[in-house]
Amino acid sequence: MKDETRAVVGGRDPAAQSGAVNPPVYHVSTIVYDGVADYLERDNMREGDTVSYGIHGTPSTYALEQALSDLEAGPGGGHRTRLCNSGLQAQTMPMLCVLSAGDHLLIPDNVYGPVRGFAKGTLRRLGIEVEFYDPLLGGDIRRHFRPNTKLVHTESPGSWTFEVQDIPAIAAAAKEHGALTMMDNTWASPLYFKAFEHGVDISTQAITKYVGGHSDMIMGSVTSTKDAYDRYVQRGWRQLGLCGSPDDCFLAARGLRTLPVRLRQHWTNGLAVAEWLMARPEVAEVIHPAMPHDPGYALWQRDFRGAASLFAFTLQERYSSLPAVCAMLDPMERFAIGSSWGAFESLIVPVFPAKLRTATRWPIEGRAPGQVIRIHVGLEAVADLIADLDEGFARLRAAST
Image (cartoon, rainbow, N blue to C red; front, side):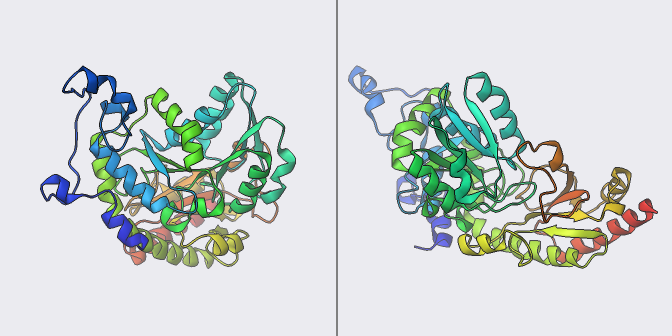
């Protein structure tokens, strides 16, 4: 079965729902039982088949989890998906499940900022050793392993500077050491990167972004191999009390049905805008893994099945003052200023990678200096988006004289 079909049929069972196309929304906390014997057996029921308490899953959550697992499927993977209340929870939950005091965690230096904050704050407070590494190490990451290294986090491409990691090499090195590999796969989604085919043990994504696709819900998902699920994820997920709200499950499932179509258009629109930006004299560099000039292109071409609409460009230094950038961005009509991405509307923000990195310096070798602008290209007409950017560049030039 092709992924486009999986996205449409996954988690649906009209025959069990009086012919209704979509799984209904279950607003429920308490579950009542026929008798004491059934009540005492509730913890022995296989989750996904029977509801035992609202927070542990309802038919609404099970349907979405099954659909996501189907898309994540790969050799040894896609065993089970569990939902979280945000993308950040989806990143932090596996860390709390796998790691104990005294363990060592490796995190790429281009990691999503709130995950960095969680690692430096909560994890270190719990006695977990946290080390940030160069995301471009590939298999050389093994030189950072310690006897107590239990987990390697990856994010490819990074959500600010878009380095593509050699996930198969990192995962192979981790397996040699007996450590698990987890990956934030939000940028590509399971449609465009098959995490388990590349050796990942735990694949996470912010459902808020492309799966939701409409800027109206917050959710995350964690999908794992059977071994990782049985050893770590299931127990930790229950103990942390994480779940997806029933209404958000409905919205995410609805978004999933059109994900393949939307993602193809995002890819097309994003590349069209990126190619236009390449010709702008105000732009020093376009940072987009799916473009042949990009340092990550070879890995993207080898491992990915498509590209997202989120990328960045760097302004020439003479155009990089903050007042000039504000003059460019503030009056934008088609591009809103906002931190999220993945939905139908286009977004743009200045980002400051040098302020966060500790293991590597920005700009890294080969990257242009100057202000980095992150851009999410939505589903508007490309001509309208380019016209908006063109007017913005005129304001940028005027403010830089």
